[in-house]
Image (tube, rainbow, N blue to C red):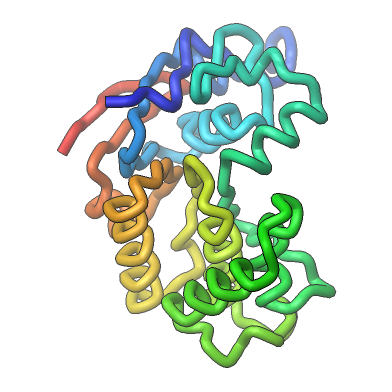
Length: 228
């Protein structure tokens, strides 16, 4: 199997002195191409911090984070931005949609940065919006969509660019049971058919039940790593 994500003895400390919080403590993991992995644990366990480290949104105090043989801690800000744009799809709990853009425009945004041809962008976006139940909502702006619908647009934006891996922070937090099932079905299909690598940070048992691998964190340490 091809190893695409590796963290080596990663430490992350927030604050200093007596108020210092060890968010991650000597965390080492390897994730292979095509895995469908959930990072789970109680609030404050370090799962979101680890996800942010893997995505290059934060940097460790010590240790290495290697994505496709590239130690991303060595990249400067512009290099990291370029690397993320080409390789990583993000799904955030807070959606992070652009308010003045329509659902369609938000979904195609990363592909515009990647210079993907217009016809290909249109085909991918319309197909994915239909698959997540948003057919007919292409022209709606985020403020005209429910929270669950906004989350689905955010997922389409991440998937449409066909990244090497998808990093999702509580992607089902604002979805009902039907929408969650549809979304997980779509992600599972892309995982199987496109060999996309998914890493979730989640409390949602519905996501955990579908994961092929579950990494449990507590107090910034990995306490269990379960392959299924």
